[in-house]
Length: 388
Ligand code: AOS
Ligand code: ZN
Ligand code: ZN
Image (tube, rainbow, N blue to C red):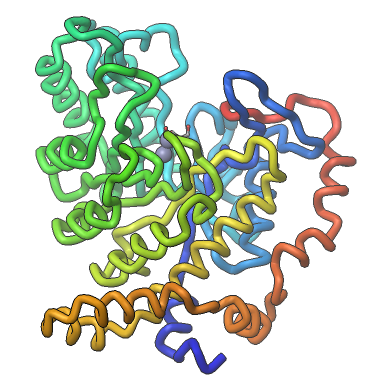
Protein backbone atom coordinates (compact mmCIF):
# COMPACT_ATOMS: atom_id res chain seq x y z
CA UNK A 1 0.00 0.00 0.00
CA UNK A 2 2.92 2.33 0.66
CA UNK A 3 3.45 2.59 -3.08
CA UNK A 4 0.23 4.59 -3.62
CA UNK A 5 0.23 7.82 -1.62
CA UNK A 6 -2.97 9.29 -0.14
CA UNK A 7 -2.95 11.88 -2.95
CA UNK A 8 -2.82 9.18 -5.60
CA UNK A 9 -5.56 7.19 -3.86
CA UNK A 10 -7.71 10.30 -3.69
CA UNK A 11 -7.34 10.79 -7.47
CA UNK A 12 -8.12 7.14 -8.09
CA UNK A 13 -11.12 7.34 -5.79
CA UNK A 14 -12.65 10.00 -8.03
CA UNK A 15 -12.02 8.16 -11.29
CA UNK A 16 -15.17 7.53 -13.33
CA UNK A 17 -15.37 5.57 -16.58
CA UNK A 18 -18.47 5.53 -18.78
CA UNK A 19 -19.58 2.22 -20.28
CA UNK A 20 -21.18 1.88 -23.71
CA UNK A 21 -24.54 0.08 -23.68
CA UNK A 22 -23.60 -1.59 -26.98
CA UNK A 23 -20.69 -3.45 -25.38
CA UNK A 24 -23.24 -5.71 -23.69
CA UNK A 25 -25.06 -6.71 -26.88
CA UNK A 26 -23.77 -9.27 -29.33
CA UNK A 27 -21.32 -7.94 -31.86
CA UNK A 28 -19.11 -9.46 -34.48
CA UNK A 29 -17.53 -8.98 -37.84
CA UNK A 30 -19.12 -9.09 -41.27
CA UNK A 31 -18.32 -12.82 -41.19
CA UNK A 32 -20.21 -13.87 -38.08
CA UNK A 33 -21.93 -12.56 -34.99
CA UNK A 34 -21.67 -15.17 -32.25
CA UNK A 35 -24.48 -15.17 -29.74
CA UNK A 36 -24.05 -15.73 -26.03
CA UNK A 37 -26.63 -17.12 -23.58
CA UNK A 38 -27.88 -14.37 -21.31
CA UNK A 39 -27.18 -11.53 -23.70
CA UNK A 40 -29.49 -8.59 -22.90
CA UNK A 41 -32.73 -8.44 -24.87
CA UNK A 42 -33.39 -4.75 -24.34
CA UNK A 43 -31.83 -1.54 -22.99
CA UNK A 44 -33.03 -2.33 -19.46
CA UNK A 45 -31.02 -5.53 -19.41
CA UNK A 46 -27.97 -3.82 -20.93
CA UNK A 47 -28.04 -1.30 -18.11
CA UNK A 48 -28.43 -4.07 -15.54
CA UNK A 49 -25.28 -5.68 -16.93
CA UNK A 50 -23.40 -2.39 -16.96
CA UNK A 51 -24.38 -1.82 -13.34
CA UNK A 52 -22.63 -5.11 -12.46
CA UNK A 53 -19.35 -3.59 -13.62
CA UNK A 54 -19.84 -0.66 -11.27
CA UNK A 55 -20.90 -2.91 -8.40
CA UNK A 56 -17.62 -4.83 -8.54
CA UNK A 57 -15.23 -1.96 -9.31
CA UNK A 58 -16.84 1.33 -8.17
CA UNK A 59 -15.31 2.68 -11.39
CA UNK A 60 -18.15 2.82 -13.87
CA UNK A 61 -21.04 4.96 -12.60
CA UNK A 62 -22.47 5.99 -15.98
CA UNK A 63 -23.76 4.26 -19.10
CA UNK A 64 -23.83 5.74 -22.59
CA UNK A 65 -26.78 5.06 -24.87
CA UNK A 66 -26.99 4.79 -28.65
CA UNK A 67 -30.19 6.06 -30.28
CA UNK A 68 -32.22 4.39 -31.77
CA UNK A 69 -30.52 1.14 -30.68
CA UNK A 70 -31.53 1.93 -27.10
CA UNK A 71 -34.98 3.18 -27.97
CA UNK A 72 -37.59 2.77 -25.21
CA UNK A 73 -41.10 4.04 -24.59
CA UNK A 74 -40.08 6.12 -21.58
CA UNK A 75 -36.57 7.45 -21.06
CA UNK A 76 -37.65 8.76 -17.67
CA UNK A 77 -38.43 5.18 -16.73
CA UNK A 78 -35.10 3.94 -18.11
CA UNK A 79 -33.35 6.64 -16.10
CA UNK A 80 -35.10 5.49 -12.94
CA UNK A 81 -34.19 1.89 -13.69
CA UNK A 82 -30.52 2.91 -13.99
CA UNK A 83 -30.62 4.94 -10.81
CA UNK A 84 -32.25 2.09 -8.91
CA UNK A 85 -29.26 -0.02 -9.94
CA UNK A 86 -26.78 2.60 -8.75
CA UNK A 87 -25.75 4.08 -12.11
CA UNK A 88 -26.82 7.06 -14.21
CA UNK A 89 -27.29 7.55 -17.94
CA UNK A 90 -24.46 9.37 -19.68
CA UNK A 91 -23.60 10.35 -23.23
CA UNK A 92 -26.25 10.01 -25.92
CA UNK A 93 -24.76 8.76 -29.20
CA UNK A 94 -26.62 9.56 -32.40
CA UNK A 95 -26.83 7.16 -35.31
CA UNK A 96 -26.94 8.32 -38.92
CA UNK A 97 -25.33 5.27 -40.45
CA UNK A 98 -28.05 2.65 -40.72
CA UNK A 99 -30.63 4.18 -42.99
CA UNK A 100 -30.81 3.82 -46.77
CA UNK A 101 -31.23 7.58 -47.10
CA UNK A 102 -27.69 8.04 -45.78
CA UNK A 103 -25.91 6.16 -48.56
CA UNK A 104 -24.16 9.37 -49.67
CA UNK A 105 -24.07 11.15 -46.34
CA UNK A 106 -26.35 12.56 -43.67
CA UNK A 107 -25.29 15.92 -42.22
CA UNK A 108 -23.20 16.53 -45.36
CA UNK A 109 -25.68 15.23 -47.93
CA UNK A 110 -26.34 17.27 -51.09
CA UNK A 111 -30.10 16.86 -50.61
CA UNK A 112 -31.60 19.26 -48.04
CA UNK A 113 -34.37 16.75 -47.26
CA UNK A 114 -31.87 14.17 -46.12
CA UNK A 115 -29.85 16.71 -44.16
CA UNK A 116 -33.08 17.77 -42.46
CA UNK A 117 -33.87 14.16 -41.59
CA UNK A 118 -30.42 13.71 -40.02
CA UNK A 119 -30.73 16.99 -38.11
CA UNK A 120 -34.16 15.95 -36.85
CA UNK A 121 -32.65 12.72 -35.56
CA UNK A 122 -30.21 14.81 -33.52
CA UNK A 123 -33.08 16.95 -32.24
CA UNK A 124 -34.75 13.72 -31.10
CA UNK A 125 -31.49 12.76 -29.35
CA UNK A 126 -31.51 16.11 -27.53
CA UNK A 127 -35.06 15.36 -26.37
CA UNK A 128 -33.77 12.03 -25.03
CA UNK A 129 -30.98 13.92 -23.22
CA UNK A 130 -33.56 16.08 -21.46
CA UNK A 131 -35.34 12.96 -20.23
CA UNK A 132 -32.22 11.04 -19.23
CA UNK A 133 -30.43 14.01 -17.69
CA UNK A 134 -27.49 13.52 -20.05
CA UNK A 135 -25.06 16.34 -20.72
CA UNK A 136 -23.39 15.17 -23.93
CA UNK A 137 -24.58 14.50 -27.45
CA UNK A 138 -21.87 12.53 -29.20
CA UNK A 139 -21.79 12.59 -32.97
CA UNK A 140 -19.82 10.13 -35.02
CA UNK A 141 -20.44 10.43 -38.75
CA UNK A 142 -19.96 7.55 -41.17
CA UNK A 143 -19.76 10.04 -44.02
CA UNK A 144 -17.31 10.24 -46.87
CA UNK A 145 -16.69 8.89 -50.36
CA UNK A 146 -14.98 5.93 -51.96
CA UNK A 147 -13.62 7.34 -55.20
CA UNK A 148 -11.73 10.48 -56.15
CA UNK A 149 -14.13 12.84 -57.85
CA UNK A 150 -17.19 11.21 -56.31
CA UNK A 151 -17.89 14.06 -53.91
CA UNK A 152 -17.32 17.78 -53.53
CA UNK A 153 -15.07 17.71 -50.46
CA UNK A 154 -15.34 21.45 -49.81
CA UNK A 155 -19.11 21.61 -50.24
CA UNK A 156 -19.54 18.74 -47.79
CA UNK A 157 -17.44 20.53 -45.19
CA UNK A 158 -19.57 23.67 -45.57
CA UNK A 159 -22.81 21.69 -45.25
CA UNK A 160 -21.41 19.87 -42.24
CA UNK A 161 -20.88 23.22 -40.53
CA UNK A 162 -24.43 24.34 -41.31
CA UNK A 163 -25.92 21.11 -40.00
CA UNK A 164 -23.80 21.05 -36.84
CA UNK A 165 -24.66 24.68 -36.16
CA UNK A 166 -28.37 23.92 -36.37
CA UNK A 167 -27.92 21.03 -33.92
CA UNK A 168 -25.69 23.05 -31.61
CA UNK A 169 -28.22 25.88 -31.43
CA UNK A 170 -30.82 23.39 -30.26
CA UNK A 171 -28.81 22.24 -27.21
CA UNK A 172 -30.30 23.03 -23.82
CA UNK A 173 -28.48 24.83 -21.02
CA UNK A 174 -25.47 22.89 -19.86
CA UNK A 175 -25.65 20.43 -22.74
CA UNK A 176 -22.67 19.85 -25.03
CA UNK A 177 -21.98 18.55 -28.53
CA UNK A 178 -18.99 16.22 -28.88
CA UNK A 179 -17.71 15.45 -32.38
CA UNK A 180 -15.79 12.21 -32.92
CA UNK A 181 -13.30 11.79 -35.76
CA UNK A 182 -12.18 8.65 -37.54
CA UNK A 183 -9.51 8.19 -40.20
CA UNK A 184 -11.50 5.91 -42.47
CA UNK A 185 -14.34 3.36 -42.57
CA UNK A 186 -16.99 2.91 -43.74
CA UNK A 187 -15.79 5.32 -46.44
CA UNK A 188 -12.41 4.45 -47.91
CA UNK A 189 -11.26 7.42 -49.97
CA UNK A 190 -12.23 10.44 -47.94
CA UNK A 191 -14.01 10.85 -44.61
CA UNK A 192 -15.70 14.12 -43.70
CA UNK A 193 -14.35 14.17 -40.13
CA UNK A 194 -11.15 12.15 -40.46
CA UNK A 195 -8.86 13.74 -37.87
CA UNK A 196 -8.68 15.84 -34.74
CA UNK A 197 -7.85 18.96 -36.74
CA UNK A 198 -11.09 18.76 -38.71
CA UNK A 199 -13.10 17.99 -35.62
CA UNK A 200 -11.41 20.89 -33.83
CA UNK A 201 -12.06 23.29 -36.71
CA UNK A 202 -15.71 22.30 -36.83
CA UNK A 203 -16.36 22.49 -33.08
CA UNK A 204 -14.35 25.71 -32.68
CA UNK A 205 -16.68 27.31 -35.20
CA UNK A 206 -19.68 26.35 -33.05
CA UNK A 207 -18.79 27.61 -29.60
CA UNK A 208 -17.65 26.75 -26.10
CA UNK A 209 -20.03 23.86 -25.62
CA UNK A 210 -18.74 21.94 -28.63
CA UNK A 211 -15.81 19.64 -28.02
CA UNK A 212 -13.76 16.90 -29.68
CA UNK A 213 -14.09 13.18 -28.92
CA UNK A 214 -10.90 11.17 -29.28
CA UNK A 215 -11.42 7.47 -30.02
CA UNK A 216 -8.08 5.75 -29.47
CA UNK A 217 -8.71 3.35 -32.37
CA UNK A 218 -9.30 6.03 -35.00
CA UNK A 219 -5.81 7.01 -36.12
CA UNK A 220 -3.27 5.90 -38.65
CA UNK A 221 -0.82 3.30 -37.31
CA UNK A 222 2.08 5.00 -35.59
CA UNK A 223 0.18 8.19 -34.72
CA UNK A 224 1.36 9.81 -31.50
CA UNK A 225 -2.05 9.85 -29.81
CA UNK A 226 -0.79 11.29 -26.54
CA UNK A 227 0.39 14.36 -28.45
CA UNK A 228 -3.19 14.91 -29.66
CA UNK A 229 -4.45 14.43 -26.10
CA UNK A 230 -1.99 17.05 -24.89
CA UNK A 231 -2.97 19.51 -27.63
CA UNK A 232 -6.72 19.14 -27.14
CA UNK A 233 -6.39 19.57 -23.38
CA UNK A 234 -4.18 22.59 -23.95
CA UNK A 235 -6.85 24.07 -26.20
CA UNK A 236 -9.63 23.22 -23.75
CA UNK A 237 -11.39 21.14 -26.38
CA UNK A 238 -11.06 17.54 -25.21
CA UNK A 239 -14.65 16.56 -24.47
CA UNK A 240 -14.38 12.81 -24.26
CA UNK A 241 -12.47 9.67 -24.97
CA UNK A 242 -13.68 6.52 -26.62
CA UNK A 243 -11.16 4.09 -25.17
CA UNK A 244 -10.39 0.78 -26.83
CA UNK A 245 -7.34 -0.83 -28.32
CA UNK A 246 -6.35 -1.93 -31.76
CA UNK A 247 -3.77 -3.92 -33.61
CA UNK A 248 -4.73 -2.94 -37.15
CA UNK A 249 -7.63 -0.53 -37.64
CA UNK A 250 -10.75 0.23 -35.60
CA UNK A 251 -10.55 -3.09 -33.75
CA UNK A 252 -12.53 -1.99 -30.65
CA UNK A 253 -10.65 -4.48 -28.44
CA UNK A 254 -10.32 -4.33 -24.66
CA UNK A 255 -8.58 -1.11 -23.66
CA UNK A 256 -4.97 -1.64 -22.71
CA UNK A 257 -4.90 -5.07 -24.36
CA UNK A 258 -2.92 -4.27 -27.49
CA UNK A 259 -0.52 -1.62 -26.23
CA UNK A 260 -0.53 -0.98 -22.47
CA UNK A 261 2.39 1.41 -22.83
CA UNK A 262 0.38 3.62 -25.18
CA UNK A 263 -2.44 3.71 -22.63
CA UNK A 264 0.10 4.73 -19.99
CA UNK A 265 1.45 7.51 -22.20
CA UNK A 266 -2.04 8.80 -22.93
CA UNK A 267 -3.00 8.80 -19.26
CA UNK A 268 0.23 10.55 -18.36
CA UNK A 269 -0.68 13.41 -20.72
CA UNK A 270 -4.20 13.45 -19.30
CA UNK A 271 -2.74 13.92 -15.81
CA UNK A 272 -0.14 16.43 -17.03
CA UNK A 273 -2.91 18.41 -18.72
CA UNK A 274 -5.22 18.38 -15.70
CA UNK A 275 -7.73 16.16 -17.45
CA UNK A 276 -7.99 13.34 -14.95
CA UNK A 277 -11.18 13.82 -12.97
CA UNK A 278 -11.76 17.09 -14.79
CA UNK A 279 -15.49 17.46 -15.32
CA UNK A 280 -14.99 18.45 -18.96
CA UNK A 281 -13.46 15.12 -19.97
CA UNK A 282 -15.58 11.98 -20.16
CA UNK A 283 -13.67 8.70 -20.10
CA UNK A 284 -15.87 6.47 -22.15
CA UNK A 285 -15.16 3.01 -23.45
CA UNK A 286 -16.14 2.16 -27.01
CA UNK A 287 -15.65 -1.55 -27.33
CA UNK A 288 -17.15 -4.68 -28.76
CA UNK A 289 -16.69 -8.12 -27.30
CA UNK A 290 -17.02 -10.51 -30.22
CA UNK A 291 -15.72 -13.73 -28.69
CA UNK A 292 -15.15 -13.05 -25.00
CA UNK A 293 -17.84 -12.65 -22.34
CA UNK A 294 -19.09 -9.10 -22.26
CA UNK A 295 -19.37 -8.15 -18.58
CA UNK A 296 -15.92 -9.62 -17.78
CA UNK A 297 -14.61 -7.85 -20.90
CA UNK A 298 -15.80 -4.53 -19.52
CA UNK A 299 -14.49 -5.37 -16.05
CA UNK A 300 -11.07 -6.09 -17.53
CA UNK A 301 -11.17 -2.80 -19.42
CA UNK A 302 -12.02 -0.53 -16.51
CA UNK A 303 -9.44 -2.28 -14.35
CA UNK A 304 -6.83 -1.78 -17.07
CA UNK A 305 -7.63 1.92 -17.18
CA UNK A 306 -7.38 2.15 -13.40
CA UNK A 307 -4.10 0.27 -13.33
CA UNK A 308 -2.49 2.46 -15.98
CA UNK A 309 -3.84 5.58 -14.29
CA UNK A 310 -2.18 4.51 -11.04
CA UNK A 311 1.11 3.91 -12.84
CA UNK A 312 0.89 7.26 -14.63
CA UNK A 313 0.19 8.98 -11.29
CA UNK A 314 3.39 7.40 -9.98
CA UNK A 315 5.59 9.33 -12.40
CA UNK A 316 7.85 11.52 -10.27
CA UNK A 317 6.99 14.74 -12.08
CA UNK A 318 9.51 16.84 -10.17
CA UNK A 319 12.35 14.50 -11.00
CA UNK A 320 11.11 14.33 -14.56
CA UNK A 321 10.98 18.11 -14.92
CA UNK A 322 14.48 18.44 -13.42
CA UNK A 323 15.87 15.90 -15.87
CA UNK A 324 14.07 17.62 -18.75
CA UNK A 325 15.40 21.05 -17.74
CA UNK A 326 18.90 19.64 -17.39
CA UNK A 327 18.78 17.97 -20.77
CA UNK A 328 19.32 14.59 -19.12
CA UNK A 329 17.63 12.46 -21.73
CA UNK A 330 18.30 9.09 -20.17
CA UNK A 331 17.36 10.15 -16.65
CA UNK A 332 14.07 11.64 -17.89
CA UNK A 333 13.30 8.43 -19.70
CA UNK A 334 14.27 6.36 -16.63
CA UNK A 335 11.87 8.31 -14.39
CA UNK A 336 9.08 7.82 -16.91
CA UNK A 337 9.76 4.12 -17.44
CA UNK A 338 10.18 3.39 -13.73
CA UNK A 339 6.57 4.36 -13.19
CA UNK A 340 5.40 2.35 -16.18
CA UNK A 341 7.20 -0.77 -14.94
CA UNK A 342 5.77 -0.57 -11.42
CA UNK A 343 3.34 -3.36 -10.61
CA UNK A 344 0.47 -1.60 -8.84
CA UNK A 345 -1.90 -4.57 -8.86
CA UNK A 346 -1.30 -5.75 -5.28
CA UNK A 347 -1.66 -2.19 -3.96
CA UNK A 348 -4.90 -1.68 -5.89
CA UNK A 349 -6.29 -5.01 -4.65
CA UNK A 350 -5.51 -4.02 -1.07
CA UNK A 351 -7.09 -0.60 -1.58
CA UNK A 352 -10.22 -2.14 -3.05
CA UNK A 353 -10.59 -4.36 0.00
CA UNK A 354 -10.20 -1.36 2.28
CA UNK A 355 -13.23 0.14 0.51
CA UNK A 356 -15.35 -2.97 0.90
CA UNK A 357 -14.82 -4.20 -2.65
CA UNK A 358 -13.49 -7.59 -3.69
CA UNK A 359 -9.71 -7.64 -4.15
CA UNK A 360 -10.23 -9.39 -7.49
CA UNK A 361 -13.42 -8.08 -9.14
CA UNK A 362 -13.14 -10.48 -12.10
CA UNK A 363 -13.13 -13.46 -9.82
CA UNK A 364 -15.84 -12.12 -7.51
CA UNK A 365 -18.09 -11.51 -10.49
CA UNK A 366 -17.41 -15.00 -11.87
CA UNK A 367 -18.26 -16.53 -8.50
CA UNK A 368 -21.47 -14.50 -8.14
CA UNK A 369 -23.33 -16.76 -10.58
CA UNK A 370 -24.78 -13.73 -12.41
CA UNK A 371 -23.95 -15.08 -15.87
CA UNK A 372 -25.57 -18.45 -15.20
CA UNK A 373 -28.60 -16.73 -13.72
CA UNK A 374 -29.13 -14.38 -16.65
CA UNK A 375 -28.57 -17.20 -19.14
CA UNK A 376 -31.47 -19.00 -17.49
CA UNK A 377 -33.71 -15.99 -17.07
CA UNK A 378 -33.22 -14.26 -20.40
CA UNK A 379 -34.92 -16.78 -22.58
CA UNK A 380 -37.22 -15.62 -25.34
CA UNK A 381 -37.21 -12.30 -27.10
CA UNK A 382 -34.38 -11.26 -29.33
CA UNK A 383 -30.89 -10.79 -28.05
CA UNK A 384 -29.63 -7.29 -28.48
CA UNK A 385 -26.96 -7.07 -31.11
CA UNK A 386 -24.48 -4.36 -32.02
CA UNK A 387 -27.44 -2.30 -32.83
CA UNK A 388 -30.91 -2.92 -31.56
C1 AOS B 1 -17.32 4.23 -34.91
O1 AOS B 1 -16.34 3.70 -35.42
C2 AOS B 1 -17.23 5.02 -33.73
O2 AOS B 1 -16.21 4.52 -32.89
C3 AOS B 1 -18.47 5.39 -32.94
O3 AOS B 1 -18.14 5.79 -31.64
C4 AOS B 1 -19.61 4.43 -32.95
O4 AOS B 1 -20.76 5.16 -32.73
C5 AOS B 1 -19.52 3.33 -31.92
O5 AOS B 1 -18.48 2.46 -32.29
C6 AOS B 1 -20.78 2.53 -31.82
O6 AOS B 1 -21.14 2.10 -33.06
ZN1 ZN C 1 -15.94 5.55 -31.05
ZN1 ZN D 1 -14.79 3.29 -33.88
